[in-house]
View 1 (tube, rainbow, N blue to C red):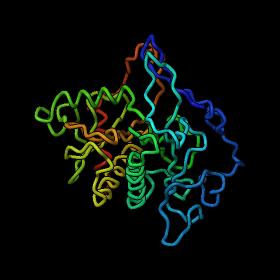
View 2 (view 1 turned 60 degrees about the horizontal axis):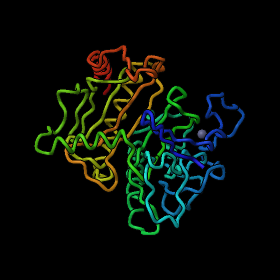
View 3 (view 1 turned 90 degrees about the vertical axis):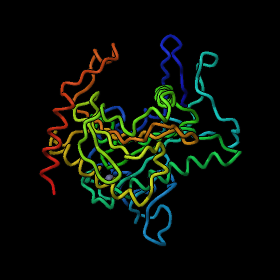
View 4 (view 1 turned 120 degrees about the vertical axis):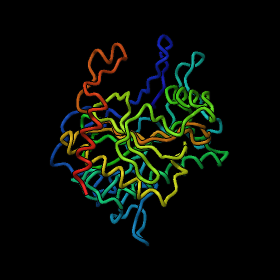
Length: 334
Ligand SMILES: [Zn+2]
């Protein structure tokens, strides 16, 4: 059973997830090349039952003709809360420093085609992925309408692409991670935005970002305070804190922007491993003055002792220079 444990000396919460030790490739060992990929079409029996999918009309659940498929993570970092749990679990605190690791952990297989990365997919297929992320956010939010279930309060969607980014499976996939409470780091960010107040917040922190590319409704930019080389954030231009509220009709535009940025990154930094993280507001709370964002974090080098010991992140590339190089490769595309 997973557990959240609070280190009362530092305030750090650690999620103990012993189930994950069993996953193949999860500890960095090479995968057996003869093994059958559990995410490929035809391997549906190797995964838990699907909870959502994009399929041709009439195709039954778990049949192999899916286009995007979502199921519970077989090696979850958190355990699904028992259905009879009526009280939403609290985060660990000084009074109770260890609490059960309840939550929701799902896998989204992004394409049927094993060798393709997200950036290789047509825009329409990237849109399908964004659409299913949005649908799962709505579904987890609506769990709160059932009084027999604990509420899912906060969700992070993320993607680990490549082993340096923590991926244990090479087949393109992302993950959906929901919790019955808001973790301290994001909670502090929302509170800070709320403290600034809606009247004092500019629509976008223009002075803190370098615009890479802007479309009708979205902007891709390099933060002036980037933790990673070639870090890029995608934001909506209007102040929307909930990705679940994003108009479906705009997701094609967002998919096209994401694809262009990922392809420029691949050209600039030799197809790096990367993490993609969707930060969106707590499911049942509006955070005024804050907007959702999609972070692309290339993993070109590992953090060392300086970062781990001091908490100071060292970025060897100025974001201004990163933005300039990425822009040059964007301009080479059609
Ligand atoms: Zn596969």
